[in-house]
Length: 134
Image (tube, helix red, strand yellow):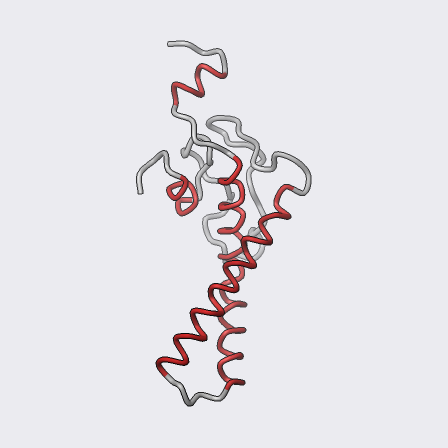
């Protein structure tokens, strides 16, 4: 992954516009006290991380898609690796996995959602927009 791609911003958790600063205040999504704490704006380029009220409601659809993909992947893996496993045990495994992955899925879905709407700008593009010339 190289800087300037959406995947870079999503997996590194950086600002979608400049790819320099982190979106979330805490690096660890499993620190439940700070799981929701995001910077208001990027300290480097000034991009708002919450462009409008309710912006991240759409991220719930992304999170839902991740959950469905996880469910299907685990279900198929169990059918292939342990076909005689009781369905109740399979559902328990999937539910436990979804609960354990919820904090990471929450953050990942927010990063994906904002990257759908905010385009990367090279440093010279950001400078021209701000009226700064070299």
